[in-house]
Image (cartoon, helix red, strand yellow):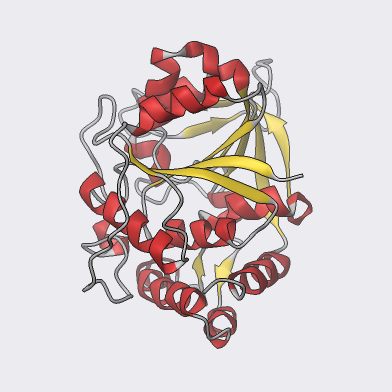
Length: 313
């Protein structure tokens, strides 16, 4: 039985690869894509999502524009990692032709969750959690109707990648993350603790490129571009691959391990805004609100990614 998912994303090279992986997997039925501001401004994330869908031959999937800015915070973007377009590394000279739906992404999210059977929809959140936070504020009833939310964000032992304490997706809109983590929705969190174990080593990117199909080559080209920042920062042999971990968990959860814990979001810290405060040792007595994953079989992850992307155009 296929799992119905809605992907909320801010492409971003790793977002693009996550979308490719979802589209290449018959176990998942992608209902729609919502493009939110995050890695780059929304004007770019929407266009990038159009390009990704067209590259994959899936212009039939509805695309919606999400939130243009965070709830309260001054907008933070990551062109220093992803380049001015957000998808630097591939040919961006062509203009996509697929439409963007007139309805807003938040309106679609509320409508689609209410229209579906309870626990029928899984949300996959690859960027800031703004759209879901707005939807929960306008329509709190949808919280009990969602099957779960699988998100890439946060960190525990790996600390931060945009500040010393915070991971980018949570830092970009900590107020939104606070709403989502307190909504009572089953959450699966793929933090930096996991993604920093899934390194795009040269032989892994070569295997992708050797598939020879346009989506695999585009994935390898994009990751070869975005890795330069992390290679310089960390000094590792490969760069972490973040967002595709969410899709891999849906497909093969046995690749990952972690535990159910309480995760709080720091929204007012002088030095720690956007920090995910993980009660790993249950010292607060607060009930767990998330399955927080901390380890991964990186070889199995890249085998899955390479094998599946080979089936795309």
